[in-house]
Image 1 (cartoon, one colour):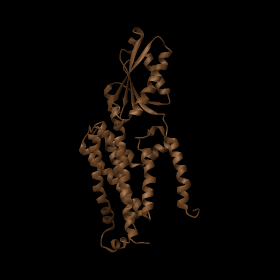
Image 2 (cartoon, one colour; image 1 turned 120 degrees about the vertical axis):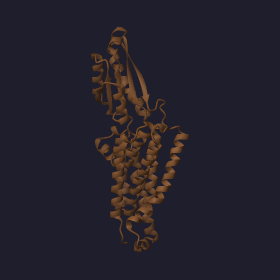
Image 3 (tube, helix red, strand yellow; image 1 turned 90 degrees about the horizontal axis):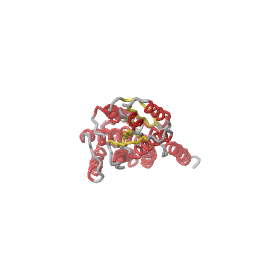
Length: 349
């Protein structure tokens, strides 16, 4: 055991890595959530409350907006999770009627995050109100994209990313290794078949099978779970095909590097399941994690696909809002295919 470095890495390295990752990522607190303030009142009280929001560790006040249209654009772009709106008659109601109203608008595509952010904001307002009794400030909460706070709205896009990622990578990671173990790779290598075509031919059957999985997942989500597809179904299907090709390319790379099927499957499961669950964003908010882990999440393809699926299915956005994420997936796919081709050995050792 001590002479086998791979076994030592699994025995000691894997537990250390997992405890550090889960220790930093698993938290019930929500920190550094980006919010905006729409202050129609422009009075001293609204400015004091805005300063309290900015001073709180749970919030980062992005900017002060001037209209609800700008708030909607900020939510659609995914820049913010919460908006605080002070109405035009806020100060008059506060001083003459002894009560005023503040509107809290939350992105409810993640119901748990939306509930916690509105609770944090309400506590800040209540603390200010307790210092100025008998005046009252009432909060009116509005949940957009998911007013019923259904948990499936958040988990279905995440499960789509997780299932397609793991299934596609696992299926293809053992394909080339299997040919080596069965001895059929020798026949393929002496044939006039181009190595690039050999790699592509290994991915095409799994691409077709993954498309069947995709169709089943979408149908179950719509019919049984009641998850809407507010955007273009064709666009969702095309982006999903791109993500499937990305996952297949990663599986081919693992298959070229691994020496046995067991190694390939082990790398696919352990090496991809934990990062996909942690760094996609549907289980734990990414803004809670250290900056290093947030940067590390950018190399996980499922993170970008999860953002795209939420934008299309839940927010009803078009290609103009997701072209950056699509470009990242396309670049990842090209790089993985190029590396897979370079790592493919035309001679057996």
